[in-house]
Amino acid sequence: MKSNVTIIDYGLGNLFSIKRAFEHCNVDAKITQSHDDIGKADRLVLPGVGAFSAGIIGLKELHLIEPIKEYALTGRPFLGICLGMQMMMEASEEFGKHRGLGIIRGTVVPVPSKGAGSEKLKIPHVGWNSLCKPGYVDSWDKTILQGISLGTYMYFVHSYYVEPSDKNNCVAFADYGGHRLPAVIAMGYIYGCQFHPERSAAKGLHILENFMKI
Amino acid sequence: MSNIRLIARLDIKGPNLIKGIHLEGLRVIGDPYEHAKLYYQDGADELIYMDAVASLYGRNSLIEIIRHTAYDIFVPLTVGGGIRSVDDVRNILRAGADKVAINTAAVRRPGLISEVSNSFGSQCMVLSIEAKRDGRGGWEAFADNGREHTGMDVIEWVKRGEELGAGEIFLTSVDQEGTGKGFDVELVKTVEDTVSIPVIASGGMGEAAHLLEVVREGKADAVAMAGILHYKRMSVSEIRNIVLAENIKVREI
Image (cartoon, rainbow over all chains, first blue to last red; front, side, top):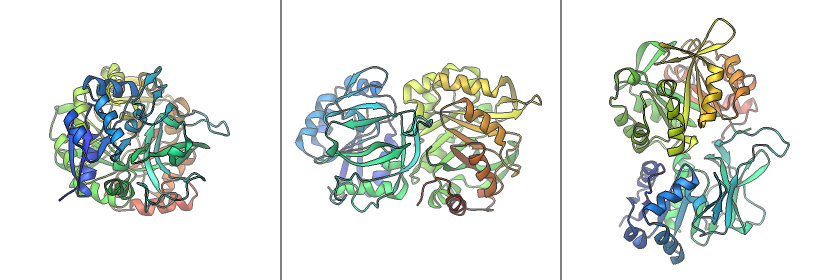
Protein backbone atom coordinates (compact mmCIF):
# COMPACT_ATOMS: atom_id res chain seq x y z
CA MET A 1 0.00 0.00 0.00
CA LYS A 2 1.19 3.50 -0.80
CA SER A 3 2.05 5.62 2.19
CA ASN A 4 -0.03 8.74 2.64
CA VAL A 5 0.26 12.26 3.92
CA THR A 6 -2.35 14.83 4.89
CA ILE A 7 -1.77 18.47 3.90
CA ILE A 8 -3.70 21.19 5.73
CA ASP A 9 -5.45 23.75 3.51
CA TYR A 10 -6.25 27.01 5.26
CA GLY A 11 -6.31 29.23 2.21
CA LEU A 12 -2.64 30.17 2.17
CA GLY A 13 0.30 28.40 0.74
CA ASN A 14 1.43 26.55 -2.30
CA LEU A 15 -0.55 23.42 -1.53
CA PHE A 16 -0.40 22.13 -5.03
CA SER A 17 3.38 22.29 -5.26
CA ILE A 18 3.61 20.35 -2.03
CA LYS A 19 1.03 17.79 -3.09
CA ARG A 20 2.81 17.24 -6.40
CA ALA A 21 6.18 16.92 -4.67
CA PHE A 22 4.82 14.17 -2.43
CA GLU A 23 3.12 12.45 -5.36
CA HIS A 24 6.43 12.54 -7.20
CA CYS A 25 7.83 10.62 -4.21
CA ASN A 26 5.10 8.01 -4.76
CA VAL A 27 3.02 9.17 -1.80
CA ASP A 28 -0.76 9.64 -1.70
CA ALA A 29 -1.22 13.27 -0.69
CA LYS A 30 -4.57 14.53 0.52
CA ILE A 31 -5.38 18.22 0.87
CA THR A 32 -7.93 18.85 3.59
CA GLN A 33 -9.70 21.39 5.77
CA SER A 34 -11.41 18.79 7.93
CA HIS A 35 -10.75 18.14 11.64
CA ASP A 36 -11.49 14.47 11.16
CA ASP A 37 -8.84 14.09 8.49
CA ILE A 38 -6.29 15.78 10.73
CA GLY A 39 -7.20 13.54 13.66
CA LYS A 40 -6.87 10.42 11.52
CA ALA A 41 -3.70 11.44 9.67
CA ASP A 42 -0.64 9.19 9.70
CA ARG A 43 1.56 12.07 8.69
CA LEU A 44 0.59 15.71 8.70
CA VAL A 45 1.98 18.71 6.80
CA LEU A 46 1.27 22.34 7.65
CA PRO A 47 2.38 24.39 4.64
CA GLY A 48 2.28 28.11 4.31
CA VAL A 49 3.59 31.20 2.64
CA GLY A 50 2.61 34.70 3.62
CA ALA A 51 1.96 36.61 6.79
CA PHE A 52 1.82 34.96 10.23
CA SER A 53 -1.38 36.67 11.33
CA ALA A 54 -3.16 35.74 8.10
CA GLY A 55 -2.10 32.14 8.62
CA ILE A 56 -3.31 31.95 12.21
CA ILE A 57 -6.58 33.66 11.30
CA GLY A 58 -7.04 31.16 8.46
CA LEU A 59 -6.59 28.25 10.88
CA LYS A 60 -8.91 29.84 13.45
CA GLU A 61 -11.70 30.44 10.98
CA LEU A 62 -11.62 26.79 10.00
CA HIS A 63 -11.45 25.73 13.70
CA LEU A 64 -8.24 23.85 13.02
CA ILE A 65 -6.10 25.16 15.87
CA GLU A 66 -7.22 22.58 18.44
CA PRO A 67 -7.17 19.57 16.06
CA ILE A 68 -3.60 20.46 15.03
CA LYS A 69 -2.47 20.85 18.64
CA GLU A 70 -4.11 17.53 19.53
CA TYR A 71 -2.40 15.85 16.59
CA ALA A 72 0.97 17.22 17.73
CA LEU A 73 0.44 15.56 21.13
CA THR A 74 0.05 12.12 19.54
CA GLY A 75 3.72 12.02 18.57
CA ARG A 76 2.93 11.14 14.97
CA PRO A 77 5.11 12.75 12.26
CA PHE A 78 4.31 16.39 11.63
CA LEU A 79 6.08 18.74 9.22
CA GLY A 80 5.67 22.50 9.11
CA ILE A 81 7.04 24.27 6.06
CA CYS A 82 8.08 27.94 6.09
CA LEU A 83 5.12 29.83 7.61
CA GLY A 84 3.79 26.43 8.72
CA MET A 85 6.94 25.95 10.77
CA GLN A 86 6.74 29.46 12.16
CA MET A 87 3.14 28.93 13.26
CA MET A 88 4.27 25.96 15.37
CA MET A 89 6.00 28.43 17.70
CA GLU A 90 4.44 30.27 20.64
CA ALA A 91 4.34 33.78 19.20
CA SER A 92 5.44 36.03 16.36
CA GLU A 93 6.44 39.66 16.11
CA GLU A 94 5.27 39.93 12.49
CA PHE A 95 3.02 43.03 12.14
CA GLY A 96 2.45 43.22 15.91
CA LYS A 97 2.42 40.39 18.43
CA HIS A 98 0.51 37.26 17.53
CA ARG A 99 0.07 33.96 19.30
CA GLY A 100 1.10 30.83 17.49
CA LEU A 101 0.18 27.20 17.98
CA GLY A 102 2.68 26.85 20.82
CA ILE A 103 3.74 23.35 19.81
CA ILE A 104 7.43 24.20 20.02
CA ARG A 105 8.63 26.75 22.56
CA GLY A 106 10.09 29.92 21.11
CA THR A 107 9.24 32.92 18.99
CA VAL A 108 9.32 34.24 15.44
CA VAL A 109 11.42 37.37 14.89
CA PRO A 110 12.46 39.50 11.89
CA VAL A 111 15.47 38.59 9.78
CA PRO A 112 18.05 41.30 10.62
CA SER A 113 18.45 43.89 7.86
CA LYS A 114 22.12 44.27 8.67
CA GLY A 115 24.81 41.62 8.56
CA ALA A 116 27.27 40.85 11.34
CA GLY A 117 29.69 43.28 9.67
CA SER A 118 26.80 45.81 9.53
CA GLU A 119 26.49 45.47 5.74
CA LYS A 120 23.00 45.88 4.29
CA LEU A 121 21.07 42.62 3.95
CA LYS A 122 18.20 42.12 1.53
CA ILE A 123 14.84 41.34 3.08
CA PRO A 124 13.29 38.89 2.38
CA HIS A 125 16.08 36.37 2.51
CA VAL A 126 15.32 34.81 -0.84
CA GLY A 127 17.24 32.27 -2.83
CA TRP A 128 19.34 29.17 -2.38
CA ASN A 129 21.35 28.87 0.79
CA SER A 130 23.34 26.00 2.25
CA LEU A 131 22.53 23.94 5.33
CA CYS A 132 24.98 23.99 8.23
CA LYS A 133 25.03 21.73 11.25
CA PRO A 134 25.30 23.26 14.74
CA GLY A 135 28.19 21.92 16.82
CA TYR A 136 25.90 20.26 19.38
CA VAL A 137 24.26 18.08 16.70
CA ASP A 138 26.35 14.95 16.13
CA SER A 139 24.76 13.84 12.91
CA TRP A 140 21.68 14.26 10.74
CA ASP A 141 21.14 10.50 10.67
CA LYS A 142 17.67 9.44 11.79
CA THR A 143 16.32 12.94 11.10
CA ILE A 144 14.60 14.20 7.96
CA LEU A 145 18.07 15.33 6.85
CA GLN A 146 19.43 11.80 6.72
CA GLY A 147 21.56 11.41 3.59
CA ILE A 148 21.77 15.17 3.02
CA SER A 149 25.38 16.41 2.86
CA LEU A 150 26.59 19.37 4.85
CA GLY A 151 26.40 22.47 2.71
CA THR A 152 23.51 21.27 0.56
CA TYR A 153 21.58 24.18 -0.94
CA MET A 154 17.87 24.68 -0.31
CA TYR A 155 15.44 27.35 -1.48
CA PHE A 156 14.52 29.94 1.15
CA VAL A 157 12.11 32.83 1.03
CA HIS A 158 11.25 34.52 4.31
CA SER A 159 11.43 37.78 6.23
CA TYR A 160 11.06 36.24 9.70
CA TYR A 161 12.75 33.30 11.35
CA VAL A 162 12.21 31.12 14.40
CA GLU A 163 14.14 31.31 17.63
CA PRO A 164 13.44 28.14 19.63
CA SER A 165 13.80 28.58 23.39
CA ASP A 166 15.74 25.34 23.53
CA LYS A 167 18.56 25.65 21.03
CA ASN A 168 18.70 21.86 20.78
CA ASN A 169 15.48 22.06 18.76
CA CYS A 170 17.52 23.56 15.91
CA VAL A 171 19.19 20.78 13.92
CA ALA A 172 20.30 22.81 10.90
CA PHE A 173 20.79 26.48 10.18
CA ALA A 174 21.59 28.74 7.25
CA ASP A 175 24.09 31.55 7.45
CA TYR A 176 22.76 34.89 6.26
CA GLY A 177 25.17 37.79 6.59
CA GLY A 178 26.78 36.10 9.59
CA HIS A 179 23.43 35.38 11.29
CA ARG A 180 22.49 31.80 12.02
CA LEU A 181 18.91 31.36 10.88
CA PRO A 182 17.38 28.04 12.01
CA ALA A 183 16.59 26.06 8.87
CA VAL A 184 15.32 22.81 10.37
CA ILE A 185 13.86 22.43 13.84
CA ALA A 186 12.89 19.16 15.45
CA MET A 187 11.13 17.91 18.55
CA GLY A 188 10.53 14.18 18.46
CA TYR A 189 8.79 13.50 15.15
CA ILE A 190 7.69 17.10 14.81
CA TYR A 191 9.76 18.95 12.25
CA GLY A 192 9.86 22.40 10.75
CA CYS A 193 11.69 23.52 7.60
CA GLN A 194 12.24 27.21 7.02
CA PHE A 195 13.15 26.51 3.39
CA HIS A 196 10.85 24.92 0.84
CA PRO A 197 11.77 21.25 0.29
CA GLU A 198 9.10 21.07 -2.41
CA ARG A 199 10.94 23.86 -4.27
CA SER A 200 14.50 22.70 -3.60
CA ALA A 201 14.88 20.30 -6.53
CA ALA A 202 16.09 16.71 -5.98
CA LYS A 203 17.64 17.29 -2.54
CA GLY A 204 14.44 18.86 -1.28
CA LEU A 205 12.40 15.91 -2.51
CA HIS A 206 14.81 13.65 -0.64
CA ILE A 207 13.83 15.40 2.59
CA LEU A 208 10.15 14.75 1.88
CA GLU A 209 10.97 11.09 1.25
CA ASN A 210 12.77 10.99 4.59
CA PHE A 211 9.72 12.48 6.28
CA MET A 212 7.68 9.55 4.96
CA LYS A 213 10.09 7.10 6.55
CA ILE A 214 10.40 8.49 10.08
CA MET B 1 24.50 39.15 0.26
CA SER B 2 22.54 36.09 -0.85
CA ASN B 3 23.75 33.71 -3.47
CA ILE B 4 22.79 35.02 -6.87
CA ARG B 5 20.06 33.13 -8.70
CA LEU B 6 20.22 31.87 -12.27
CA ILE B 7 16.72 32.12 -13.66
CA ALA B 8 15.44 30.76 -16.96
CA ARG B 9 12.90 33.14 -18.51
CA LEU B 10 10.29 31.65 -20.81
CA ASP B 11 8.06 33.98 -22.81
CA ILE B 12 4.85 32.29 -23.82
CA LYS B 13 2.34 33.02 -26.54
CA GLY B 14 -0.59 30.64 -26.67
CA PRO B 15 0.88 27.14 -26.54
CA ASN B 16 4.36 28.20 -27.67
CA LEU B 17 7.64 29.30 -26.19
CA ILE B 18 8.61 32.44 -28.08
CA LYS B 19 11.42 34.93 -28.25
CA GLY B 20 11.53 38.44 -29.64
CA ILE B 21 13.85 41.40 -29.84
CA HIS B 22 12.92 44.36 -27.65
CA LEU B 23 9.91 42.15 -26.74
CA GLU B 24 8.70 42.39 -30.36
CA GLY B 25 8.93 40.35 -33.55
CA LEU B 26 8.10 37.21 -31.64
CA ARG B 27 9.48 33.99 -33.02
CA VAL B 28 8.31 30.52 -32.04
CA ILE B 29 11.00 28.47 -30.29
CA GLY B 30 9.07 25.36 -29.32
CA ASP B 31 7.19 23.69 -26.50
CA PRO B 32 7.51 25.66 -23.25
CA TYR B 33 7.11 22.54 -21.14
CA GLU B 34 9.99 20.69 -22.82
CA HIS B 35 12.27 23.68 -22.41
CA ALA B 36 11.22 24.29 -18.81
CA LYS B 37 11.91 20.68 -17.95
CA LEU B 38 15.33 20.80 -19.60
CA TYR B 39 16.29 23.95 -17.70
CA TYR B 40 15.05 22.49 -14.44
CA GLN B 41 17.05 19.31 -14.94
CA ASP B 42 20.09 21.33 -15.87
CA GLY B 43 19.90 23.20 -12.56
CA ALA B 44 18.03 26.47 -13.14
CA ASP B 45 17.44 28.06 -9.72
CA GLU B 46 14.02 29.35 -10.74
CA LEU B 47 11.78 29.65 -13.77
CA ILE B 48 9.83 32.69 -14.91
CA TYR B 49 6.92 32.35 -17.34
CA MET B 50 5.76 35.54 -19.04
CA ASP B 51 2.64 35.45 -21.14
CA ALA B 52 3.32 37.91 -23.94
CA VAL B 53 -0.26 38.54 -25.00
CA ALA B 54 -2.50 38.02 -21.99
CA SER B 55 -2.62 41.62 -20.95
CA LEU B 56 -4.02 42.54 -24.38
CA TYR B 57 -6.39 39.72 -25.07
CA GLY B 58 -7.56 38.71 -21.63
CA ARG B 59 -7.30 35.26 -20.23
CA ASN B 60 -6.15 32.30 -22.26
CA SER B 61 -4.77 28.91 -21.50
CA LEU B 62 -1.90 30.18 -19.39
CA ILE B 63 -3.32 28.38 -16.34
CA GLU B 64 -3.21 25.07 -18.21
CA ILE B 65 0.39 25.64 -19.26
CA ILE B 66 1.35 26.39 -15.66
CA ARG B 67 -0.42 23.32 -14.36
CA HIS B 68 1.36 21.17 -16.91
CA THR B 69 4.74 22.77 -16.16
CA ALA B 70 4.42 22.73 -12.40
CA TYR B 71 3.63 19.03 -12.55
CA ASP B 72 7.21 17.85 -12.35
CA ILE B 73 9.32 20.92 -11.82
CA PHE B 74 10.44 21.41 -8.23
CA VAL B 75 12.02 24.84 -8.21
CA PRO B 76 10.19 28.16 -7.77
CA LEU B 77 7.99 29.24 -10.63
CA THR B 78 7.00 32.86 -11.23
CA VAL B 79 4.21 33.66 -13.66
CA GLY B 80 3.35 36.98 -15.26
CA GLY B 81 1.11 38.35 -17.99
CA GLY B 82 -2.47 39.51 -17.77
CA ILE B 83 -2.86 39.28 -13.99
CA ARG B 84 -5.44 41.87 -12.89
CA SER B 85 -6.86 40.84 -9.55
CA VAL B 86 -6.36 38.91 -6.34
CA ASP B 87 -8.56 36.19 -7.83
CA ASP B 88 -6.27 35.92 -10.86
CA VAL B 89 -3.34 35.53 -8.50
CA ARG B 90 -5.12 32.85 -6.48
CA ASN B 91 -5.90 30.89 -9.64
CA ILE B 92 -2.32 31.07 -10.83
CA LEU B 93 -0.96 29.97 -7.46
CA ARG B 94 -3.48 27.14 -7.37
CA ALA B 95 -2.18 25.98 -10.74
CA GLY B 96 1.25 25.54 -9.16
CA ALA B 97 3.03 28.89 -9.40
CA ASP B 98 4.87 30.30 -6.39
CA LYS B 99 4.96 33.98 -7.29
CA VAL B 100 3.29 36.32 -9.72
CA ALA B 101 4.91 39.08 -11.76
CA ILE B 102 2.62 42.06 -12.35
CA ASN B 103 3.26 45.07 -14.56
CA THR B 104 0.38 46.55 -16.53
CA ALA B 105 -2.38 46.06 -13.95
CA ALA B 106 -0.17 47.53 -11.20
CA VAL B 107 0.57 50.57 -13.36
CA ARG B 108 -3.16 51.11 -13.87
CA ARG B 109 -4.02 50.43 -10.24
CA PRO B 110 -1.02 50.46 -7.88
CA GLY B 111 -3.23 49.33 -4.97
CA LEU B 112 -3.19 45.86 -6.52
CA ILE B 113 0.39 45.48 -5.28
CA SER B 114 -0.77 45.89 -1.67
CA GLU B 115 -3.77 43.64 -2.18
CA VAL B 116 -1.63 40.80 -3.50
CA SER B 117 1.04 41.36 -0.90
CA ASN B 118 -1.46 41.41 1.96
CA SER B 119 -3.31 38.35 0.69
CA PHE B 120 -0.39 36.07 -0.19
CA GLY B 121 2.69 37.72 1.32
CA SER B 122 5.16 40.08 -0.26
CA GLN B 123 7.41 37.20 -1.36
CA CYS B 124 4.67 36.31 -3.82
CA MET B 125 4.34 39.78 -5.32
CA VAL B 126 7.00 40.43 -7.95
CA LEU B 127 6.75 43.86 -9.55
CA SER B 128 7.62 43.51 -13.22
CA ILE B 129 9.13 46.58 -14.85
CA GLU B 130 9.71 47.07 -18.56
CA ALA B 131 12.17 49.93 -18.78
CA LYS B 132 13.27 51.99 -21.77
CA ARG B 133 15.84 54.75 -21.73
CA ASP B 134 14.07 58.09 -22.01
CA GLY B 135 16.90 59.97 -23.71
CA ARG B 136 17.30 62.26 -20.69
CA GLY B 137 19.51 59.99 -18.62
CA GLY B 138 16.61 58.15 -16.99
CA TRP B 139 14.18 55.35 -17.80
CA GLU B 140 10.47 55.23 -18.50
CA ALA B 141 8.33 52.28 -17.40
CA PHE B 142 6.33 50.66 -20.21
CA ALA B 143 3.22 48.51 -20.03
CA ASP B 144 1.70 45.82 -22.22
CA ASN B 145 4.93 44.03 -22.98
CA GLY B 146 6.93 47.12 -23.80
CA ARG B 147 4.30 48.57 -26.13
CA GLU B 148 2.57 51.25 -24.11
CA HIS B 149 4.05 54.41 -22.58
CA THR B 150 3.10 54.99 -18.97
CA GLY B 151 4.89 58.30 -18.48
CA MET B 152 6.21 56.90 -15.20
CA ASP B 153 9.83 57.19 -14.16
CA VAL B 154 11.24 53.75 -13.39
CA ILE B 155 13.11 54.86 -10.29
CA GLU B 156 10.06 56.58 -8.78
CA TRP B 157 7.92 53.58 -9.66
CA VAL B 158 10.15 50.94 -8.03
CA LYS B 159 10.35 53.07 -4.90
CA ARG B 160 6.56 53.26 -4.77
CA GLY B 161 6.24 49.56 -5.60
CA GLU B 162 8.45 48.63 -2.67
CA GLU B 163 6.42 50.84 -0.32
CA LEU B 164 3.21 49.22 -1.53
CA GLY B 165 4.53 45.78 -0.67
CA ALA B 166 6.34 44.31 -3.67
CA GLY B 167 8.78 41.59 -2.59
CA GLU B 168 11.01 41.59 -5.65
CA ILE B 169 11.62 43.65 -8.76
CA PHE B 170 11.77 41.86 -12.10
CA LEU B 171 13.58 44.43 -14.19
CA THR B 172 13.59 44.04 -17.96
CA SER B 173 15.48 46.45 -20.16
CA VAL B 174 13.39 46.61 -23.32
CA ASP B 175 16.32 48.32 -25.07
CA GLN B 176 18.60 45.35 -24.41
CA GLU B 177 16.06 42.52 -24.50
CA GLY B 178 16.70 40.02 -27.27
CA THR B 179 19.87 41.75 -28.48
CA GLY B 180 22.36 39.51 -26.68
CA LYS B 181 24.50 42.61 -26.24
CA GLY B 182 24.53 42.67 -22.46
CA PHE B 183 22.36 44.07 -19.68
CA ASP B 184 21.60 47.71 -19.02
CA VAL B 185 23.97 47.65 -16.06
CA GLU B 186 23.37 51.27 -15.17
CA LEU B 187 19.62 50.65 -14.94
CA VAL B 188 20.12 47.64 -12.67
CA LYS B 189 22.61 49.50 -10.48
CA THR B 190 20.35 52.53 -10.14
CA VAL B 191 17.36 50.39 -9.16
CA GLU B 192 19.50 48.34 -6.75
CA ASP B 193 20.61 51.54 -5.07
CA THR B 194 16.99 52.68 -4.78
CA VAL B 195 15.27 49.65 -3.24
CA SER B 196 16.19 47.16 -0.55
CA ILE B 197 14.22 44.24 -2.03
CA PRO B 198 15.90 41.80 -4.45
CA VAL B 199 16.24 42.80 -8.10
CA ILE B 200 16.20 40.34 -11.00
CA ALA B 201 18.07 41.67 -14.03
CA SER B 202 16.57 40.71 -17.37
CA GLY B 203 17.27 41.49 -21.00
CA GLY B 204 20.42 41.25 -23.02
CA MET B 205 22.39 38.26 -21.87
CA GLY B 206 24.40 36.96 -24.82
CA GLU B 207 27.40 35.52 -23.02
CA ALA B 208 28.56 34.69 -19.49
CA ALA B 209 30.61 37.89 -19.27
CA HIS B 210 27.36 39.88 -19.36
CA LEU B 211 26.14 38.08 -16.26
CA LEU B 212 29.39 38.73 -14.39
CA GLU B 213 29.13 42.41 -15.27
CA VAL B 214 25.53 42.86 -14.13
CA VAL B 215 26.24 41.04 -10.85
CA ARG B 216 29.53 42.78 -10.07
CA GLU B 217 28.75 46.27 -11.29
CA GLY B 218 24.97 46.25 -11.33
CA LYS B 219 24.71 44.35 -7.99
CA ALA B 220 21.91 42.19 -9.41
CA ASP B 221 20.53 39.63 -6.95
CA ALA B 222 19.33 37.35 -9.72
CA VAL B 223 19.78 37.11 -13.47
CA ALA B 224 17.12 36.08 -15.95
CA MET B 225 18.24 34.52 -19.21
CA ALA B 226 16.26 33.49 -22.24
CA GLY B 227 17.72 33.51 -25.77
CA ILE B 228 21.12 32.27 -24.65
CA LEU B 229 19.39 29.13 -23.35
CA HIS B 230 16.66 28.79 -25.98
CA TYR B 231 19.14 28.99 -28.87
CA LYS B 232 21.46 26.61 -26.97
CA ARG B 233 24.41 28.97 -26.98
CA MET B 234 25.07 27.95 -23.39
CA SER B 235 23.44 25.69 -20.83
CA VAL B 236 22.51 26.61 -17.27
CA SER B 237 25.17 24.27 -15.90
CA GLU B 238 27.89 25.77 -18.10
CA ILE B 239 26.91 29.23 -16.93
CA ARG B 240 26.85 28.10 -13.29
CA ASN B 241 30.36 26.66 -13.58
CA ILE B 242 31.69 29.93 -14.95
CA VAL B 243 30.01 31.88 -12.16
CA LEU B 244 31.53 29.54 -9.56
CA ALA B 245 34.97 29.78 -11.16
CA GLU B 246 34.68 33.57 -10.90
CA ASN B 247 34.05 33.28 -7.15
CA ILE B 248 30.57 34.71 -7.31
CA LYS B 249 28.31 33.12 -4.71
CA VAL B 250 25.77 30.84 -6.32
CA ARG B 251 24.07 27.57 -5.44
CA GLU B 252 26.40 24.62 -5.84
CA ILE B 253 24.73 21.44 -7.06
